[in-house]
Image (cartoon, rainbow, N blue to C red; front, side, top):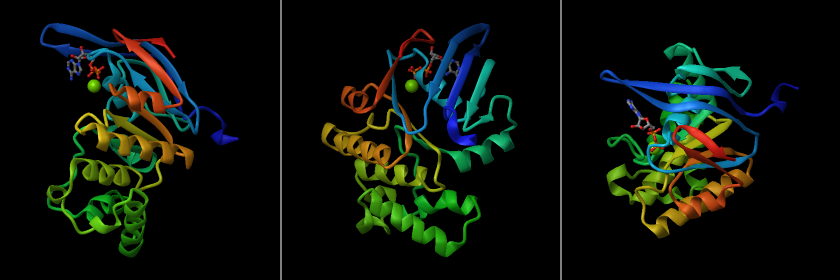
Length: 227
Ligand SMILES: Nc1ncnc2c1ncn2[C@@H]1O[C@H](COP(=O)(O)OP(=O)(O)O)[C@@H](O)[C@H]1O
Ligand SMILES: [Mg+2]
């Protein structure tokens, strides 16, 4: 069976950054498997390598050494073009600062990755409307990001991340910009998504979000110290 292995598999991954003459060893030999259907929170002090790790899983960045396999495909060493196409069809990424397009409506923002995937106009509008309904924003389809609250903008960003049926949803501090009550809405949404079958890996400082996940992976100084 093709789909039986872990959806994420990292083996002895290192990531060094050059900063002037200095080398920063952001990841120092990380191995991690995430099973399909799991919901994993990566936690640990600021600077320990959480975002670096998530960016490698999301094929936004490449390791200095080690292997990264996502959905049975080796992604380390991919060209930029391959990586862009792989991300479009396999990965949804949610960021702390939403990164919505300010001149597009909520519906157009959610439909954008579907346009990149060459879906027909009617199909994209129908699916974008469905996704906005899923995140509870049917009444906000025509609103621009500046006409939405922070929590609503993050829900649009989550709907956008789901546009092309990704096998994997990644989120880096998704409640970091939100007040506690709004953060709770995002936590509930992630739980519903995971119950409905989405595999989620989230990086967070938010204890409530970490508690809601099925597993926590603890990092320190570029290493996993407990999983
Ligand atoms: N582009 C970069 N260039 C140089 N150093 C970086 C870069 N990105 C991250 N780092 C360093 O790598 C380490 C891990 O960073 P990061 O993964 O962002 O940590 P976290 O998300 O856990 O706060 C930190 O020491 C950080 O300063
Ligand atoms: Mg970070």
